[in-house]
Amino acid sequence: MPTFLTPNRHGYSVRFSPYQPERIVCATSQYFGLAGGGTLFLLEITPEGNLVEISTFQWTDGLFDVVWSETDANIVVSASGDGVLQLWNVSCPQLPPQTFREHKKEVYSVDWSQTRQEQFVLSASWDCSVKLWDPNRPNSLATFLGHSQLVYSAMWSPHVPSCFASVSGDGTLRIWNSHVPQRATMTLRAHDAEVLCCDWCKYDQNILATGGSDGLIRGWDLRSFSSPIFEQKGCEYAVRRVKFSPHHFSALASVSYDFTTRIWDFKVSSEAIETVKHHSEFVYGLDFNNHVPGQIADCGWDSLIHVFSPRSLSALRPHLTLAPK
Image: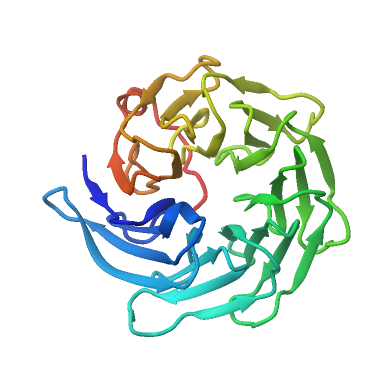
C-alpha cells in the first residue's frame, strides 16, 4: 500500500488526477487547520508502487479542499481558511497562484463542473454562501444564499449541466440551478444534525448521498425527495466525506472522525461491507481513481496519505456502462 507522510501538515482533501492515473494532489493544513499555513502536495505513484513527492505549493492559511481542472491536466484549485481560492499551475511551481477573494470566512469545499457544456467552479463557505466562478474571470458570476448556517460542501451533478447540490450545518440538502441564484429548486431536511458532505451517483442522475455529524449516510432520489431510499449505519462519529464509486452503481466509500474508511453497497446491506482502519486520527480526504477500478486514496490528521484497493471492491462486478468523466 503506497503511503506518504506530510510532516507537520494534516490532511484535509486528496484527489486523483482525471488525466494521469498515477498523479495525486493533497491539501493540508498546519496545526490541524486551526492556525498556521497550508501546503499543497503533488504526488505520483511510481511503477515500483511508491508514493513520491513531485512538488509542493505553500499558502499562508490552511488549505481545506482541492480539485483538478476538467480542461487542463496541470491546473488545480484549492480553498483556504482565509476565504481565498487559489488556482495553481502544477507544472510551474515557481509561479504564484491566481487568487479569487470574495468569501468572508473559511472556504471548505471546491468543485469543478464535469459536464462538457460548462466549465465552472463552485466554492462553499462558512459565510453561509456558495459562489460560482469562471476560472478565467477575477470576480464570481453568482452567489447562492439560502442556507442559515455554514455551508460544508457544494457538488456539481456529473450528469445535468447547471445543477448542483449543497449541504450545510443547518441540516438541509439543497438542489440548485446555477442560472437561478435567487433560490434553491429543492430543499430537504436531510439529517437531524449538521450535513458535512454529499456526492452524486455516477450512474443515475437522480440519486445522491449525504453524510452527517450523526454518523449516518443517507441516499436520496430527486423523483421522490420526502424520505431516504437508503440509510447506511455504522460510523461511530461524523461522516466527513462520502463518494460514489465510478465503477459500481451501488458502491460508496466514506471517511469519518472515527478514524475509519468504510466501503458500502446500498443494494446489499445497510452496514459496511468493509472497514479499513489504517489512520490514527480523523480521516478527512477521500477519492476514487477513475482510471483504476477499486483504487482509493484517503488522508487524515495523522499526516498520512494512503493509496489502496479494498478487497470488497474487487469482489463487486463493474457496472456495464461507463460513468461520465
